[in-house]
Length: 449
Ligand code: NDP
Image 1 (cartoon, rainbow, N blue to C red):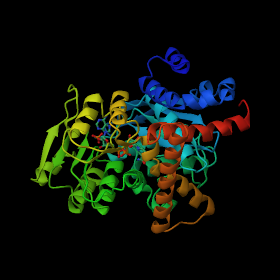
Image 2 (cartoon, rainbow, N blue to C red):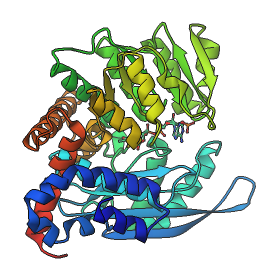
Image 3 (cartoon, helix red, strand yellow):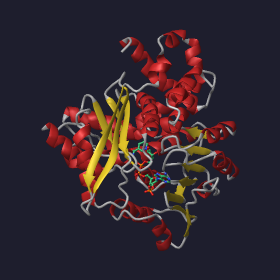
Image 4 (cartoon, helix red, strand yellow):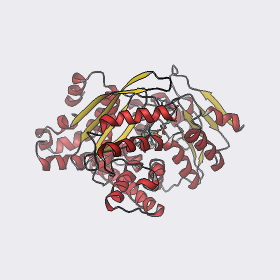
């Protein structure tokens, strides 16, 4: 175990996901540290793993029955060396400090890769929006913002959505921020189109992941045309991944939620995707209903005690994990390889555990880690910030064109960094090194702060 990982584990032994993220990045950048002893002397690894600021707060609110509920709110301001902190808010019962620190840590390097001036942060709450009324979600969001507003701002820290935080939640959060601050500013991204949002922001993470996959395939003179694709999740990222896959002539065949997954051998068509969007974004129902409506599909309940996820055990060419962290373990990765999958492109953050990553690299899959492959979301968030600063809106075509260019540039930087450090084709090492160098050089320029 590296010295820095040991230091992190000793200090916060319960933060497993954070250890996992630190371990992966530090292993990748070891050759950079060896080549540049000045970074170790400047205690760069120790400084990177310590958030610049952590805010943790109580969020009391009243439910529809008049009962008082208490949740916990967080914001991690991880690293602001290259710009204001930027990263989403996650509302999910599993949220804790360790999960948010892993997400904030990943975000630092991801944001650096986008070429835009954004530092890294992340936040959220253990509040579960599932099964809550709009009124309850509004009350929670307003109370959450009653504390968070002190710590964020258009030039300080700009949150966005993540799991459980979509257009509805961002509206409620922004509304309370505006009231408390008495200002209308670009403090959030993912805003509604008629109040400062950017076209293509909802689509950006999914579209970006598919653009990244197309770039990876192009290195082997292939395209997505005709490829059978496994997609997990059925939220924002999964929906727009499926949309772009369809536009590129691929055939997506799976979707999931935390209750189970569907496998539609005939393919998820545009019409079926519209049904999923209505089901998930408007009616807030379960993916099981897909199989009740479309007889070409089979549904299977999730089994949290199983040692593998059956979604990853179907014949396919490509896989797009787009639900949550550690949804692919070593056994799932081995199943993917066995079933002929040649490309894995991560829409979700850290969806593959270290055993799984090892198998993908060993079998020389085209493996795009989340840090690079899902950076399209934060990239268009950066473009939303630019449009807000200029007080104008770009067209759909213009934003999409910029998104494509950014994904291409992330792909190139990752490949070049991997080759420069003797690991050609290894996007994990490449993305970590390229992001790391940009942040670390800024930290060196700014001295010990
Ligand atoms: P959503 O809340 O819109 O959708 C999440 C989906 O994943 C839902 O289908 C949800 O099912 C499922 N899911 C969540 N947690 C679990 C779990 N523990 N087990 C099984 N299924 C689960 O979130 P997003 O689509 O925005 O985010 C998905 C992933 O993409 C996350 O890892 C996020 O960090 C990452 N990401 C998102 C970006 C964005 O722009 N939104 C940007 C970059 C990365 P259910 O409804 O049953 O909970």
